[in-house]
Image 1 (tube, one colour):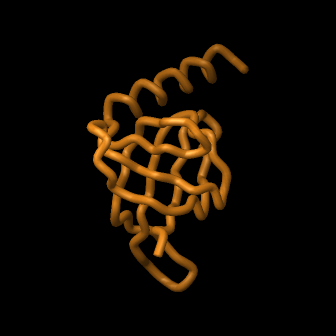
Image 2: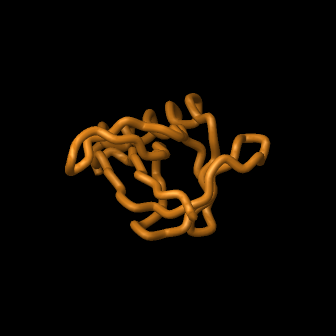
Length: 100
């Protein structure tokens, strides 16, 4: 990994921590990041809204269960990771599906 890549990952991690409004608990790891209950996304058939979580160095895979809580531990969301967009610099956006 180049020096720039290392710096970029560090900056992404610090920015994610500074902007965090929630904690994702996935695969027995806690990750600070940004939770949006209704994020507008382009779906196969048009625009729609899905819950998303974005953060740095997220250790998860599609179909993993996920819980999202406030920094104080109040529950915000419980569901499954349905899709992951990784940008190659350590930042990921998770598209979520709520449990029924």
